[in-house]
Length: 229
Image (cartoon, rainbow, N blue to C red; front, top):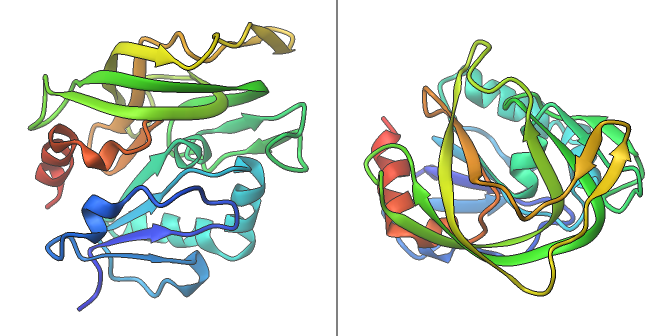
């Protein structure tokens, strides 16, 4: 039986945060390298990364980006968590080259965001309220471990309009918030003060969030799985 959900494993993938999916046989979840995927899943998940730009370049080099595009064209669903969310955007700016060997790269272009990477990490435990679907109003709790700060480029426009996924209720930051930094003229980097987390396309085909452990939350599970057909 083919898996229903596939988690793409990349060279700099972070810890395995999908035990609620892998531990329940009803979800039929598998983890594999993108070049080993042979199709058939309903959902592809791109997870966190210690070097987002390098993992994005690798994804393209092994054909994974084209695999995801083909998956979407055939009616599939994709989920990006932290680095995966950033890769789904239009542009990644890494002037200090902490995330790879390229200071600026184009993203996959699935979501209307751009992401800049700064000199420090934000580490926080974050509680947010779900804004859409069957779990609307429920609280979810996750962790943020990121130097990326994403901003919306054309929210609600284009061929696939998007909606905010969560509204942040509380963000308990470990240490001080990183001070603002100008990455390039007119581009200010300051993660940790965002009112909203994540985006989802109106057709529920493309999901992105900064919250690690999101699949550990019953409210998100209700929202996500109720959207699958």
